[in-house]
Image (cartoon, rainbow, N blue to C red; front, side, top):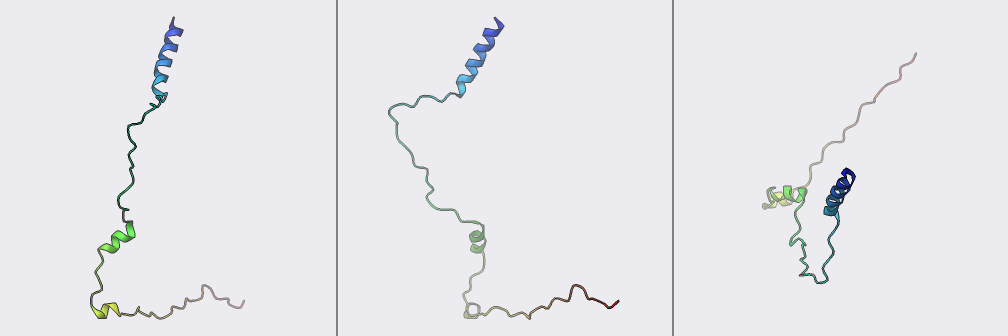
Amino acid sequence: MKFFAAIFLLASSAQAFVPSMPSPVQACSVALDAKHANNKAAKKSNHDHPRKSRPSDINRKPTNYPKWENPPEYTILEE
């Protein structure tokens, strides 16, 4: 008797995971596409940057820094 009760409980709980049969007539399909693409992180951060409105800002050339010569990592000394 316990065996049949266990089988009955197992079958009734497994029925919850069986997909329902699709109906022959579907009501309507709804498209869930995004209306506008979301800005990504770089574009969001650039949104808050100051604008180059003055001609001195617009025509500014990049800064030329001097080339850095790395010192030698090690030197060989005579024995």
